[in-house]
Length: 86
Length: 203
Image (cartoon, rainbow over the protein chains, first blue to last red):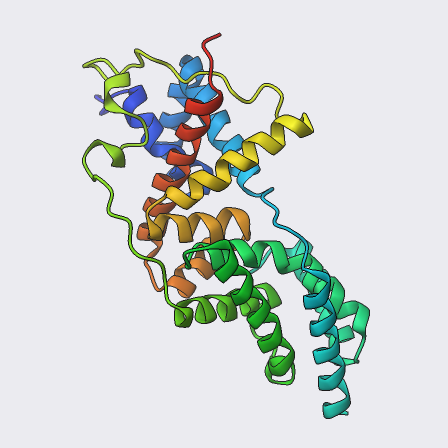
């Protein structure tokens, strides 16, 4: 009996599948194929780690605190709302 | 739908808000202000306009408090308001970018004809735990985000800065799941490439 064998992934394909892999949107077969490639390719493994790291750092973007006067304004608006609605 | 970690806290804050608790309001602003800024920034042309949009949003939140029914998470509600405000302020001009090779996650010249790496990714994340390095990375990401095509920037900001899930982002931007994933992939890939270009070095 012959099993149809899928061709192995190459790096250039693997880098295009990284998001699908991280998002968990791959079929089980595709996932296995992707992981098989990673296990034999340190460069693509590094690439995946870099993508994860990029996502993590993007999640840490911070902006300035609200200016004090805006904060005060918001609080007073909120107080008005509170008085108005009670 | 939102992340349980923030949803639980947000619901408590909402209770506090409705009960007239000023501290709850300050806490809500403190928790969401920075992410709303980046969402606004992904739609408008300058930091100053984005700041105004966010301030308007908080005003709208206070006025709309009694109308919020809690059917979506507070975060999604806030993001929806910020997007509406940003859109009515006038979205930024579309940047026209060359579409050819730039849509590949990695420059095709970095692979041989069989698709194997010739120029493998250069190392850049060694000291990511270091605060100074992390600060530099964030700074770079911030300017890279600004240079992404509009739709990529919006998706990456909503997913990775604001932390919404894919379903919420699809609804907010009215795009399909597949489209969302493609935009996310292209956007993230470009951010990674920018970090490599700026900080990478051959080991």
